[in-house]
Image (tube, rainbow, N blue to C red; front, top):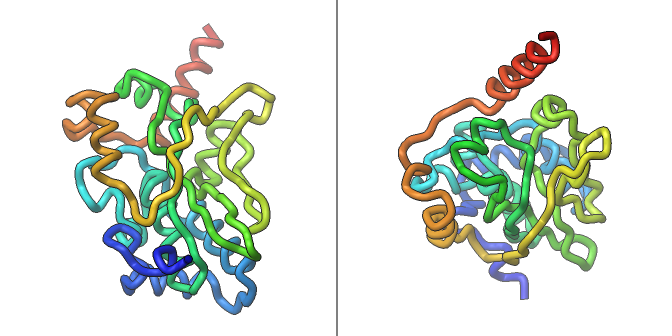
Length: 227
């Protein structure tokens, strides 16, 4: 039943030495599956810098081991890394995906995409204590602070998948379509959707730094307020 959720794949390369070393470093002496999952969650959430500006046509933007080696990634490789680390430690896991309407982005990024609908937002599903539990290690603590969001916490027992509201109660993220879970990262399907939604401009080597953009836009808003 769980065979496919324990073995390495092209993108969830749980047998890669970088993944094995990363998991070992952060798991430490934890014994229970819950302890292991929680330790990995926080290590990936805050230790792998969130970066939406990646080459969407390159395998390196999707593969778990590349997230370790570059210390950055968007939601897909960060979730893949958590799945890979769990599999490497004998815990069945798989990546899941959903389309979300998300405001956790700079205005520049939203303008480049032409929408606030983000298809194929990824999370991790782990089989712990007899049930599947979802977690989303995408958005690190620093990024959440810049957006005035409460970071997603994970206890290994209950789902932790989206920032529904910001710190003052404004609607922040909505899941609009559930794409389900997979054995491996469906890179080809993701690229096909991106091409349909974002158009060719999205693949023209767009670069940026989300963290710097947030700081710049925040300062600009403050300046406008002063005026």
